[in-house]
Image (cartoon, rainbow, N blue to C red; front, side, top):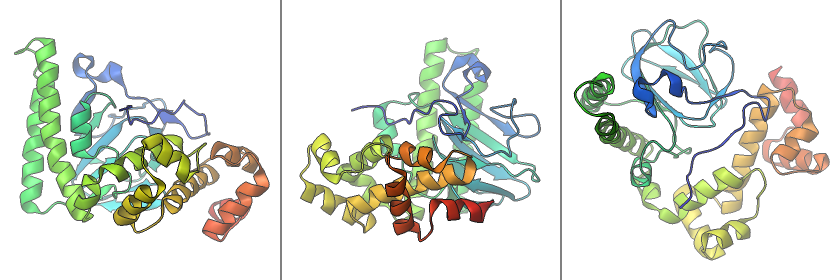
Length: 298
């Protein structure tokens, strides 16, 4: 099956996308883990409080004072002992007034094998970024993350190839714990096991900008339209068309709120070459025109 990572060219939509900082990784491996604090960032050339995307996964375990972090139009207050999981392509912004303390883990798409990606739900965009573990869960996550950090900096006891393999296994162990917490908190175990919906969700994430057709997705995945409808309804309570439309609306909102792109270009970027059709679609799903929505946020 194709890689599920999202590929964005830097600045294609007016929102800057920062690539995984390979040059800052120990040994050039596809992950980093370490303490957060002043001067530690993945894009030192640009203020972290600006809206941006990343093309990698970021997990932050917060300690110390609470911080506020925006992810896709929702402002989250993250307290000590809570985690933020930001996935590739999500629009987010650090607080300019808060000092982030804790441990940050970032990982490059493709660093983990496909089986681990599936098992850990790396691309569960339906799950909330904020995770609140209980005391026992937090202790286990902290121990697992600390072990990962020790393995990450220990480059002297193993050859580079074995060091990378150990990192992958240790990272997978941490992510399995994190994924269990995420699925449990969202009561989403059934959805996680639903391969049909998983494949549909991934296909929509890749194709929503050009493909809004339920039948086209069903044909591409090898399912009947009825099978796809049943799977999506069981997982989300909505139709496949509704699921696709929500994803298109989210992207349109991102571009309207965080860029100065003309309305027509935004419509074309989400699959509506005709600006009038885009405005009609957006108004139908939000109750506002694209111009009105942008004006309310400015």
